[in-house]
Image 1 (tube, rainbow, N blue to C red):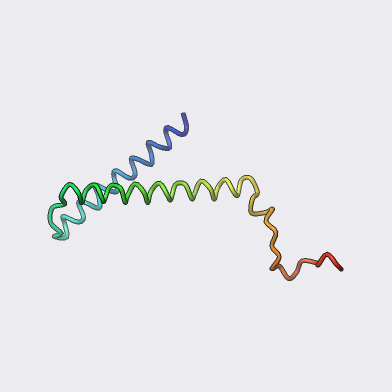
Image 2: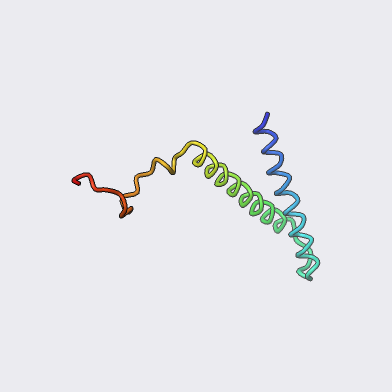
Length: 84
């Protein structure tokens, strides 16, 4: 049920963002958007919101599961070499 709720939130944010950008476009004198403009604006906004959501989920999952802590940082000069 949590995934459905998150998806609804993402879609709501994308919808509100699309309407806000469309209204701002008309307010600055850009003219009415044709249907193709609304479709392009909707897809661009939804894609951006979805990509942001996925990347933030990956960042939180990485932090929670310690993926970054397990990474081998061979450029760390303070680390003792295996030969020593």
